Length: 153
Image (cartoon, rainbow, N blue to C red; front, top):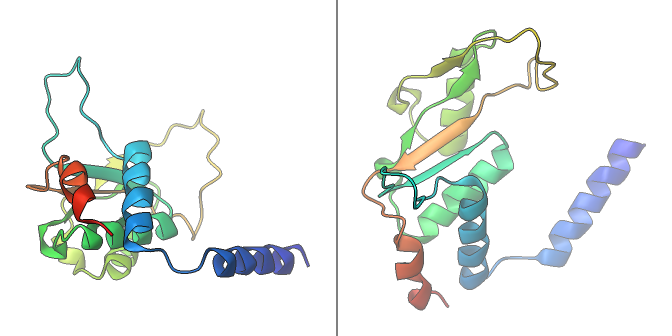
């Protein structure tokens, strides 16, 4: 019963929000990138002249890809890599994320295997564990967010 109520609540929220305008999509994506994406830091010599993002929630990844499309970042410019625990099925995870992103699994860069730490009690395990999914967009400078702002409606 509880799952049914949760599903109904989510559907009602989805209906209440409706379709996002281009401006709303831009703003929500910018906030998402600010929260989850890599940022330049004054104390760091490394300058991030591209967009970098990591998350493990499929819905968040779908939204981020939609946001990048709205910024006219071509899918071919994106680079994908998985960070996955060594005990998980890396090939299956690559296939899952490639399907979600609409790209060939062969386009993924080398998967990073994380060592298992027995002291850590992970709850995200089993068949539903899909890894963390970082993407980068070389040549899509972080200033694209500020540059596109005047052009959004």
